[in-house]
Each structure stands twice: as C-alpha cells, then as structure tokens.
Image 1 (cartoon, rainbow over the protein chains, first blue to last red):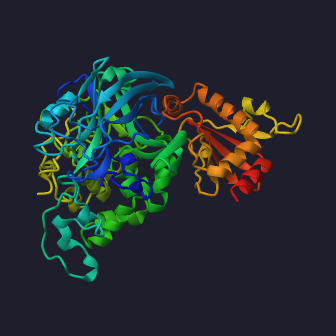
Image 2: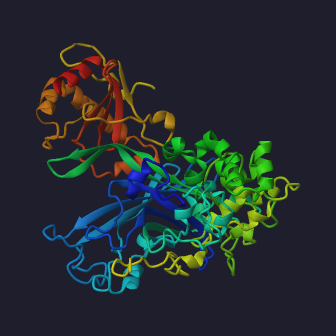
Image 3: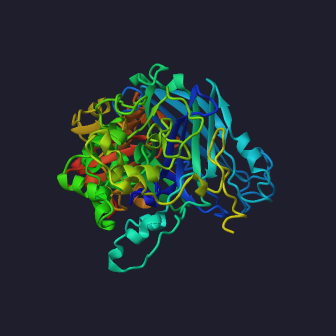
Length: 461
Length: 140
C-alpha cells in the first residue's frame, strides 16, 4: 500500500497512520494547490457503532519546504476535538443526520487549523465541523450535502475539509505481498516451483470499498511557494510536501476514568512524502525509525533508494523477464534515477519542459512544480506517461503510483541518467493490473476530489 | 545539554545550598532524533502523580510527601520551559488540552538517577540519584 500499515509500530496505531499524501495544482483553480493527507487505513464502512474518527490526541501536520533543505518552512497543523451530546445512548446518531448541526448526531468532531511559518504560529480557524461517517440511507440520507457543508472557506482564499472519504488509492495488495506476484504476469513468476499459475489474471483492488479519513487543504500558490513563479524552469516554483502525525510522549491508562491520559511534548510517529517509500524501500528493521525522522535526515537511508531491494528481487521472481535489470543490479551502479525521482527531484534539462528539483539535500518529499498547469487530459501514469502534471510532479488522487514506481524500479527511468541503458521490454508493461477505473467511488472534479465515502449500509454487499 | 535556568534555583529538600546538578530543559522542538531518544515506559518506571486522579494511589502520595518541593520546583521549571517560544510542535503543545497539574516521572536509569519529568506538553530531564532511589523505594 502507499503507506497503509507500512511499519510495525504505526500499524498498531491506525488513527495516527498516514496512508496517502497528494499535492497538485487544483484542476479547477489554477492559482491554488490542493494538499490532501489521508489517515486511518482500510476502514470497513460498516464499522459502527463507534465509527471512525480522527484522534483527539494526535497532532496532524502537513509540511511544506520551499527552500530545499528538507525542513518545514510552512506547516499546517490540525487538532481535533470530539463532543458527545448524549452519553446515555449507545447510538452514534438517534435519527437522520440532515445537516452538520443536526441534534440527531450524537458524536461530533471539530477541529482547528493553525499555520506555522518559520516557527511563528497563526490560528487560521477553530471549531470547524467534520462530517459524520457515511452510515446509510436512514442515518445519512444526503451524504453529498453533509460533505459539502463540511467544506470550509478560510480567510486568505483557502478551503479546508477534514473527514471521511473513499480511498482513492488502488493496489493489488493480495498479490504483491504474496511474494511479489503481479497477477497480469503471474504465469511468468517463478512460483517457487509450485506451478500454480498458468495464465494472466486481472488485478484485484485491495482497497476497494474502503474508506479513509482525509485532511484536505486548498491554498493559493502564493501562500506556499517561496515566490510565486510562473515559469516551470524556476527552482522557486517547486515545493516539497510531507505529512506527519505526532503523539505526546507519555500515554497512561487511567483505569479510574476508563481513558488514556497524555503528557509531554509531541513526537513524530508517522511520516509520508512520496508513496511506497517506507512501504517498499525502507527495510523492516528501520521503518519505525524512519517514521520518527524529518525528510532532512533521509541521507541516512540513501542506499535503500540507490539500491532498492525490489530491483534485485524482480529478475529472480520473474526469470528471464528482466535481463537488463539483472545486469544493472549486478553492476552495482547506484540507481541515481530513483534517488532523483524521490529524494532530490528531477533537475532541469533531463525531461523537456520539466523540473522539480529542490537541490542537493536528500529528502523524501512530494515535489510539486506549481508553475506546471493541470493537464486537460490527464494520464494516470504521470510523467512517465507524458503528463508532466502528474506523479512524480506532486501526486494527483488518481495517479497510478504503484505502476509508475514498479516500472521505475524495473529500470524504465534509468535512461534518464544513462542514455546507453536499454530497459527491458517488460519494464514499460509491468503493472499490478489496476487503473483509476478500479476505484468504484468516482473521483470528484472539485475539492476535496476524493470520492464520496462508501456507506456502511451498502458495503460490503 | 546545558542546564536550564530553572535548574539553578532548585534545592534538594532538607539540604542547604545544594544545587541539583543536572536539570535540563528538553526542547520538544523539531523531530531531531538525537534529541529525542526513544524510551520504553513501564509500569515500574513511570509514575503518574496527577492530583485527584489517584492513578498511583498511595505510592504517589508517599512520593509527593517525600519530594514535594522538588516536584513543585520541577513542574515550575517544566512550565517555564514549555512557555518559551520554540518550534511548531511546541506551539501546538501550547494549545494542548492537558491540565497543568498532571505530572509524570519516567526514571530512565535508577543507577544514575536520570529521569524525565513530563507535565502538560513539556518535558525536562534531570539527574538525581537520591530522588530516583526514593521513588523506587516508594513503589516497592
């Protein structure tokens, strides 16, 4: 998964577990960027009576580096507060929820948004309302309306939303983590000699009909870029984005009151920049550590980018399919292409009309060139599909990051730094067999762009 | 680490002019790993002395009785440390929802007396072998 349950410690703490991060120039508002950080993975829609909600005890943040040092120049902080109207009922709601102020809604959540720029905090809004979870036709009969009501307009021409959405990320987890199987090519897998698969099969979307909780922010580009640049070639047009969740250092179970109490300063427990980095590149023994560090420390992990373990595995898992990749791995040459894509951005002069380079500091951030306008006909394969407005130029909600990254690791992008290298034919074909059409809840064409969450009444069906 | 201002004013209870040697204001800023050693909290080493909460029960009362002045001064130092202008994390912490009266002590190393004291959204580290020994004795 992009970052769902990607590390041992955070897999035990879902409300602080970031799943996906998106950053893109808003397709319906070109002077703004949309930043979305998703948390609480793999929500079964029918998960009542205590439906999913953000952690009141978690500090959620979206960070922006606009100076290239892998440290936050601007941070948006989100803190949540839950209120219960009637503690004497077991119900989340006691009648239909027709609006966010409905008295039928028993357990509501509110939040504040604070902007911190170079250490200086500024409260942007408090008491903002989250929508309820999508329960079903009796409880949430017009979910569109509830969600629209939860889109808040903030001073400075900003929009904000925090609440449940359909998970827009698609991935065939069931096959990938079954020893690197990719169903469309499973007949080519070595199958460890078991001869189970004899023909290709379509991919299966493991996040299908599951929800997440999204924190979405739409901000004028001029508020986040160092100086709003209108030419894509200008370094100052690039921002680096990541999200973190932090907890106070001490948590103690107060048995007398039946709740946890917290103390001490906040410490980071979860981090996400580019998709699949901690999931696939960072080894098991270092994943928890990685989650506690800022991007500026990612030089500590550089070798896992320049020598990705998956690149070494592919030729063995698919005998004869990746001979050029096998030769490249055997040569020991560092995968500077992967390093550039994920840790520094791609410098100017390599891909015509494109750069998202932030300098020499190795830092895992989503790098978005804010001067590149949204594509009129987006290609979900992003830059490798010829669409410069897609991943790894930021990330849109529908980008097929699994296919893009698997192909990159398979050698498709190595010619960016070595024109003599000829990728294997399979490198431009390999996929887990899913596309944006694999997501049943349609993406929205407007903020917050992720689809209406699946309702508990209809899912599973 | 450098001694915090608050540390210079602290005295051991019952002893004249003895400055607690090592009390460090921990800066909860940033995510710098070197400043944030991870620690495992255990029932034995963590004692919550929240007034009225009764989590630590008799043990907490005994400790407060034995080391009340130190705890009061420490909490004050922690609050002062927490009020300094600092990073975004601390800024968020400043708006935290925790009652300032709660206090948590984590004895990291009973032998050296190194312990962390948490209150609100702040933390300080101090080193006091006698206090650590009394805490350990108090919880049996």
